[in-house]
Length: 127
Picture 1 (cartoon, helix red, strand yellow):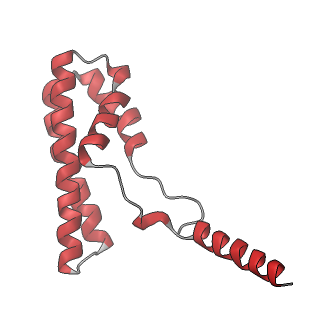
Picture 2: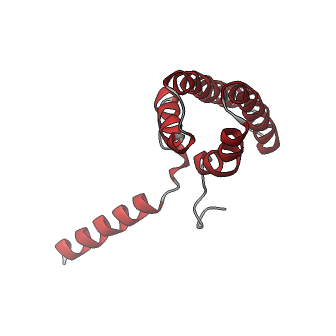
């Protein structure tokens, strides 16, 4: 009977742990996220110079976003609307920099196909 109770307790703990929201899980560092983003730009057929410039731009974008979130958390002001506005501002700055190195066709493909696939997606169970 004790073994059965211990087994049920262990299964319950494991189930509870797995059901927890993973929002607090550690994200990849900015440099790694930037590298993955540039890898997803493969359909754009970038030159090595453009790829290098894109990596710098994406790294700066992810570092700025992380810094903004850290500052918001430190100030205790984690307002969803402010966070969205900050992300849109940083994305606009990033896209302005990318426009300098992408052709018009590459920029269209970036905005319509690649960039949306980089946005974090919430699971269906999270609200």
